[in-house]
Image (cartoon, rainbow, N blue to C red; front, side, top):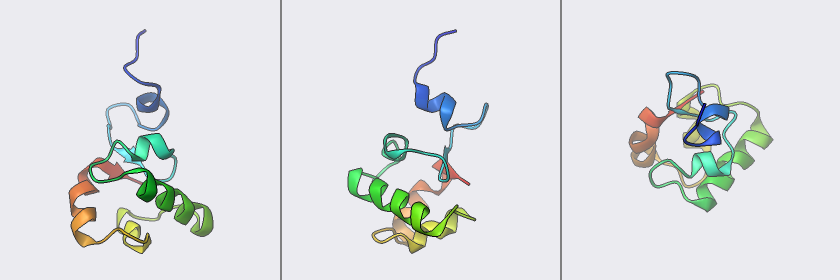
Length: 79
Protein backbone atom coordinates (compact mmCIF):
# COMPACT_ATOMS: atom_id res chain seq x y z
CA UNK A 1 0.00 0.00 0.00
CA UNK A 2 1.00 3.59 -0.54
CA UNK A 3 1.30 5.93 2.42
CA UNK A 4 1.22 9.71 2.34
CA UNK A 5 3.93 9.99 4.98
CA UNK A 6 5.86 7.72 7.30
CA UNK A 7 5.08 10.00 10.25
CA UNK A 8 1.36 9.42 9.86
CA UNK A 9 1.89 5.70 10.39
CA UNK A 10 4.56 5.82 13.06
CA UNK A 11 3.14 8.53 15.30
CA UNK A 12 -0.60 8.23 14.87
CA UNK A 13 -3.06 5.49 15.66
CA UNK A 14 -5.25 4.20 12.88
CA UNK A 15 -8.26 6.47 12.63
CA UNK A 16 -6.63 9.07 14.90
CA UNK A 17 -4.71 11.78 13.09
CA UNK A 18 -3.63 13.61 16.25
CA UNK A 19 0.07 13.87 17.11
CA UNK A 20 1.06 11.79 20.14
CA UNK A 21 3.08 14.04 22.45
CA UNK A 22 4.90 11.07 23.95
CA UNK A 23 6.20 9.53 20.74
CA UNK A 24 6.35 12.34 18.16
CA UNK A 25 9.69 13.45 16.81
CA UNK A 26 10.55 17.03 15.89
CA UNK A 27 9.16 16.77 12.36
CA UNK A 28 5.80 15.47 13.62
CA UNK A 29 5.55 18.22 16.24
CA UNK A 30 6.32 20.87 13.62
CA UNK A 31 3.19 19.85 11.70
CA UNK A 32 1.18 21.53 14.47
CA UNK A 33 0.10 25.16 14.05
CA UNK A 34 2.53 27.69 15.59
CA UNK A 35 5.01 24.96 16.56
CA UNK A 36 8.34 25.62 14.89
CA UNK A 37 11.77 24.07 15.43
CA UNK A 38 12.46 25.85 18.73
CA UNK A 39 9.17 24.86 20.40
CA UNK A 40 9.39 21.32 19.03
CA UNK A 41 12.86 21.02 20.60
CA UNK A 42 11.53 22.33 23.93
CA UNK A 43 8.66 19.83 23.91
CA UNK A 44 11.10 16.98 23.32
CA UNK A 45 13.51 18.32 25.96
CA UNK A 46 10.68 18.55 28.50
CA UNK A 47 9.68 14.96 27.72
CA UNK A 48 13.27 13.75 28.10
CA UNK A 49 13.69 15.55 31.44
CA UNK A 50 10.26 14.85 32.95
CA UNK A 51 9.07 11.63 31.35
CA UNK A 52 5.84 11.07 29.51
CA UNK A 53 3.18 13.73 29.22
CA UNK A 54 0.32 12.59 31.47
CA UNK A 55 -2.14 14.98 29.80
CA UNK A 56 -2.24 17.51 27.00
CA UNK A 57 -2.35 20.22 29.68
CA UNK A 58 1.21 19.26 30.69
CA UNK A 59 2.30 21.26 27.61
CA UNK A 60 1.76 24.38 29.73
CA UNK A 61 4.94 23.44 31.62
CA UNK A 62 6.98 23.75 28.40
CA UNK A 63 8.62 27.19 28.15
CA UNK A 64 6.94 29.23 25.42
CA UNK A 65 3.62 27.39 25.50
CA UNK A 66 0.76 29.26 27.12
CA UNK A 67 -3.00 28.91 27.27
CA UNK A 68 -3.57 30.59 23.89
CA UNK A 69 -1.11 28.40 21.99
CA UNK A 70 -2.36 25.28 23.78
CA UNK A 71 -5.94 26.12 22.82
CA UNK A 72 -4.84 26.32 19.19
CA UNK A 73 -3.21 22.88 19.13
CA UNK A 74 -5.29 20.96 21.70
CA UNK A 75 -7.47 19.24 19.09
CA UNK A 76 -4.40 18.10 17.14
CA UNK A 77 -2.51 16.37 19.95
CA UNK A 78 -3.00 13.48 22.35
CA UNK A 79 -1.08 11.51 24.97
